[in-house]
Amino acid sequence: DDNRYEVGLPWTDEFLQGQKKLVDNESQARKRLQSLSRKLSRDPQLEVRYNQAIQEMEDSQIIEEVPPEEKVVNHPVFYLPHRPVVKETSVSTKVRPVFDASALGPNGVSLNCCLSTGPSLIPSLPEILLRFRRWKYALSADVTKAFLQISVNRKDQDVHRFLWSVSGSVRIMR
Image (cartoon, rainbow, N blue to C red; front, side):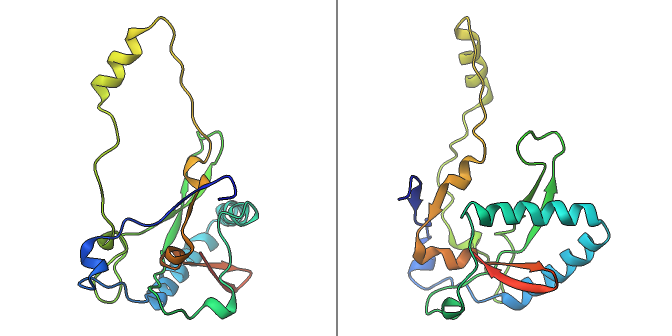
């Protein structure tokens, strides 16, 4: 869809059968946002770079603001706390937001608790090293922002909401 792969979330059977429920955790996310805002206010340069990173995601249509008419919905809503991760050695993104899907909601259930983990898709290091030595030439590459090219089904996007404070105003994003 729009040159992106679109996927649904791999919900666990417990979630689908109603044994585990995601409870709206907006108040907890607001507290984490206040803590993040205090931290960023102590480092104005980081605050600017972090806001630029989130703004770039919005400009690239990776994230969007939740329209007022969709703020209250009849399906699960969950807010992901976030924080900046700084990696000065990175070529593409030196500051990026990282979302905490392990943050527990008011009922002790996180988004990660409701999703299947699936098998590990990371190959073993010995296999990689053996393949690397097999041929005369080796090629290494890094796909810039690869995971940002995958979109989430519309029905699952509201469990990926987050709050973003811009100029004293809090925006609800997904």
